[in-house]
Length: 297
Image 1 (cartoon, helix red, strand yellow):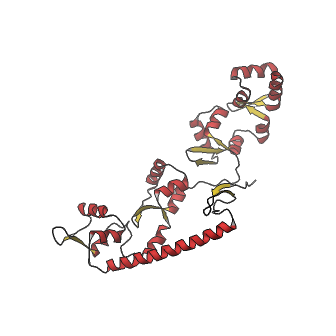
Image 2 (cartoon, rainbow, N blue to C red):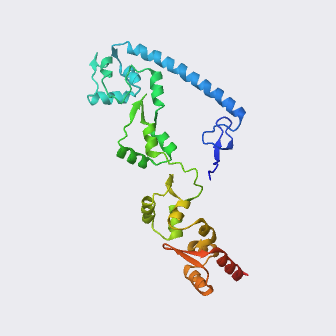
Image 3 (cartoon, rainbow, N blue to C red):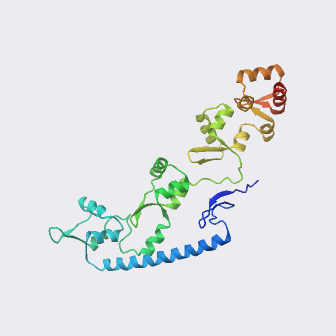
């Protein structure tokens, strides 16, 4: 059965916390949505005006044959120290006008690193290209991964960054293929690895190998690996009836605060129904509950 998910979100307009039924909902009410959309329209207009002003400044610089360090940095959307570093490394030639003044030929700027947007690229085109890329910080937040895992995976997949408008960005679609989680909207219950270790008395290594061998649905949330409860139980011969009517040994010991040895003695003496599944023993819920409840009276 498909589960209707609920999301706790913060309204982008008023800042109040509300419950949304889709992950893309931004606003808590129609009024906030209307105000938010107007604000977004104003922001887009302001951005367009800002881009137009920047474009005019760039066109003036592009009309010059020789450029200062600051002008070259502006055209490449990088910092002055980066320009000096490129000069020191021999990546960029300069022409010395005087003891303190150097200039860079505009044509030489067009020949450097292809990862940097060409200097004659329109700002509007650069902004559009940036929509297909995201920063490392955005990737870590969007895919809920660590920086170490990010670098490890992109190195293996050989995904290269691009320097666009002075920022190091990564192709969004490539990262989605690498990090996006499979959506199992029909799976409502999940085991953590720790829960399986406790419930079935198996090692973490066994769990990972078993999950991989049987192709069980799994997903990662932060540093936690979750495995479908239904598929795990089914693969080990546990049907829904058994899950509802039987306890595992750890469940009984925790519920009634008794040791394993004591529990096994109780099962043997009172002949409590039990079944064995793999390395686990399942104990009849009603029988053990009745016995333990009577003991406490």
